[in-house]
Structures are given as C-alpha cells and as structure tokens.
Length: 288
Length: 328
View 1: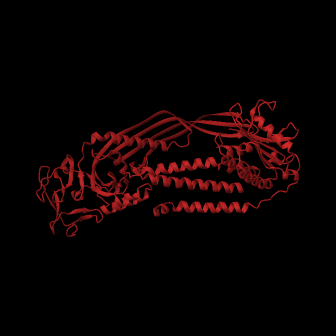
View 2: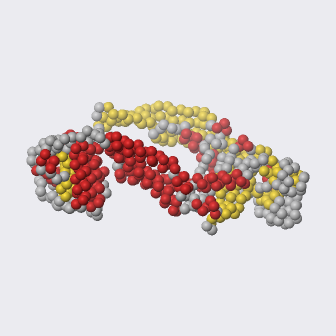
View 3: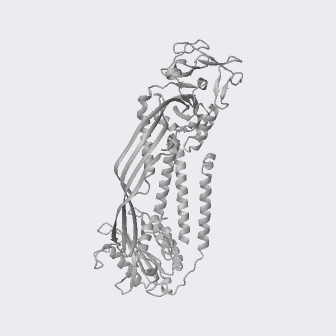
C-alpha cells in the first residue's frame, strides 16, 4: 500500500492541482448575468411533462429545479416533454424525424411558451420513447426567439448526441433522468459562451480516452521491459554518420486540383421553419 | 591455467570494482602468479579433482576446491581472443541494479523482491565476432509533396513531384554477433551497445573469477547475422535522409555490403536466475553498462489496481476539465 501511494504520488498531486483549478474556475464563473421573466403565465407552467412516466416523482421534481435555474441563465422558457406513442399519420410528412419536430413546435405554440412574452424565447426538448415503425426512437429540440438565435441545428444535434448516447430500450428511470438533465445542463453551454473544447470533452470521449490510456499503460508496463533495442542506425557507423556522396531532390513538375467546397447542410443555421400555428421555430433532431 | 597468490597461495580473481587482480583470502592486490595446467584432459591444477568441461567452456570453476580455472587450449592460438571488455560491474552492484529495476516495474509482485531466491549468479564472458563492413547505398525514387489551401469557395491541392537521389557510403565498425549457441541471440542483441572505448587487448587475467566460452562456430558461419544488422541500419540511415515527402515511389534501391574484417572478442554478461513461485526468472545484465534484459512475474491484482487507478485519474481529470469548461 505504501508503495502504491509512492508510485502514484506525482499523478495524485497533479490530479489534485487540476481539480483545485477546475473547481476554482467553476466557482468564479458561477455568478453570471441572469435574466428576468417577462411572462408570468409561462413561468408558472410545468417544466417537465412526463406523459410517458419515465421518471419517478422525485426525479421529476429535481429536473424541474434544474430547469428553473437554467431558464434564468439563458433567458428562455424551457420544457422537457416525454411521450411514448407513435406519431405516425399525425402529420402530412412521411419523414419520421419531422413528426417530433412538428409535435415539439406545436407544444410550444399551444402552451404559449416564452420567457419574455407568449410565443417568445423558448426551448422544448421532446423525447418520444416509442419506437416508430422504421425502428428508430426520435427526439427533437425545438427553439424559438433567443433559443433559435443562439442554438444552431448542429448545436441541438450535439447536445442530444452527447446526452442521449447511452439510452436504449432497457434504460432505467435513472438513465433517463441523467440523460434529460444533461440535455438541460448543456443548453447554457452551447448558447453563446461555451468554448469549442467542450465538444472534445464529451463523457463518452473521456471514458474512451481513459480506457485507452489505462490499456496503454498496462501494455507498456507488462513485459516490455524484457528489453528494448538501444542501438541506433549510427551506433556502429564510423565517425557516427555516413558519407553522403549525392543528395539530390530535383523538382520535376506539379499538378493542382481544385474542388468546390460544399456548404454544410444547415449545420451553422438555426434550422428555421414555420409551425402549423404560424410561429417561427428552429432546432434539430436525434434518433436512436 | 590458474592464478595463485604469491603471498598466501590462494586463488586470485579479477575484481571489476578495484579494476585489479585481487586475492580474496589475504586481500593482496596484483600479487598473481600464473600456474599452468588445467588443459582439457587434466585434473584441477590446484586440488587434482577431475574437471568435466562442456564442449566450448574456456573458463570455469573447479567443483571441488572452487578455484577459477582457465583452459589453456581454449584461449590460445586460434582461440585466443583479440579483444576483451573486462567486467566493470561487480556482483553486488549488479544485484543493486536488478533490485532497482524490479522496483521500477509496477506489476512485480511485492513478494518477488523479498522472497525470490537467487539461484544462480554467474559472470560470463560471451564470445563475439565483431565485423567491419562497408555499405554502399544507392537510391532513387519519385517523391511527392502535397500542399493545400482554400481560396474563395474552392479548395486547392497542389502535388509537387521530385526526382529523389541518394548515394551514400557507411563504414560499419565492430558490428557484434554472439558466437555462443547457449546464449540466446535475441537477448545478446539486446545487451548492445557496449562502449567500445573500453575495449582492451585480451589478457588471461581478466577471465579469472568468471566463466567463459570460446567461439562455438567459425566467424564465416555468423556473417549472415552481421550482414542483416548492417542492412537494417543502412535502411534506417537511408530513411533518415528522406523526410518531408508525402509519398515515395522507388525507382531503384540497392544496398551493397562488403565485409572488411572480423575480430574475435569476449564481452561481459552477468547472468542472474531468481526462483519465485516454482518458476525460474532469468536476467541478463550487461557487465559493462548494466543494461537489464529479462522479465519479472506479473501480479494480476496489481495490474488491475494500477490500471484502474490510471483509468480513474484520467476520467476524473477529464470530467473536471469538462465541468470547468461548461462554467466558462
């Protein structure tokens, strides 16, 4: 045991220092500007609409608290809607990913959501746990107002990729709670100020990197010390280097090709469209 | 032959630490006297007990009286080594090096350090042939370098083609190949490099106190291995001059090697065998530089515990950074 601590002394110290720095950074940035509600009706509305009964009561309550905090940080009315029913045939389009979009847009319209005013700044996260006939489970983040201005389609997709990656048919209410609260927590991250590096530090990437490093560490320390070659190509060469008689790099010709850059499919935009209620929405989808 | 002490008559051995002939009995320095005898058919010149020799043994220890004997016929005339690197590290220094090395290997069972029994500890002079080669490297190829940039809504990729020619000579000196069947070739290769600055003209006295073999086969039989090493190193030398190209399409590549000479030398290797859990663990240590070759047992529990710690720390750091980034 003593040897263990001796061996990991420096890694432990380094980790400790990093933790201190990170905690300090977090603490010093927590006192951010916050917004004021301008729409009392929306403020009083439920934040969590768990029609599918995916969460326990206490989880619903906790998620509600998280949403209330986030709403003031981003200045948007936020709702998490969980349903478990086929949306097939409800809308004119046959594209299943559009069904959740229409549902989420309509939800915002019907509830007159908006942080500043009805049909104002809002974000609806819809998870339809029902596996549609094409074998996929669809989710959508519908944005409008400030939410639409500050979240691009790819932001919405990244948020759901990051948060929902480990959900499947066997997920428990704990899994769902973790995933949904992460979606909500990621909203302020992606809205405006989050550094691009957050994309690299996704939980799945972190775990993968840690596994990789641990495996590498074990491999290196297993039996590699059986011996490694410590001679180089010049060990036995007289005067330590070869005599170069001719070294020639003659330019012959060059060829240039040019390719038109395809603009990426709306990844940078807000994905704006108009809902059946006549309101403008943005957002992005996810399927699993 | 056998080295006797003029003062007390004891068997004098070469002491790597004092770098001198030293009598372990009366501690006299350089008081040696060469006692001839101990040929292949003879008995021990000290006690008269019969000596059983292996086919190539040139220095050994009398099983009866413990005197270190050097077999005359196997270190003379055609078997006389031209060069030798005398042992530089003594028994205790090597033991220290080994324990330090074991301590550095995190997966070594804790018990190995305390309970492993030292079953054998032998200083061996291993016969080596040292080859001189000249290599003539000729190479030509078409190389490409790629540059790309964006202008307006277009991405440009420019590929430049070069005529690449390399001609070089390399003189390889004293490329070592072990001439012992008993010694594992891979392990002997891993003992390299020796510091050739300390090569000396062969003297019988350096063998006293150690085991040794004469070369097991003629130098011509081992040329192939020397040539392989020269080829490998030449390839690497060539490669080191070819940086900066994205692709190289060979037009012509030839590495011609030419043997210039060969010398017979003895190089020092400590052999330590530890017994642990019913298994023998063999370590070779370069008797000049202290480089260790050999595997230690692996404690599975330690692998799991240490691996999990690394995993845990990296994960923790990752999530901490993530948390800080999210707050920014």
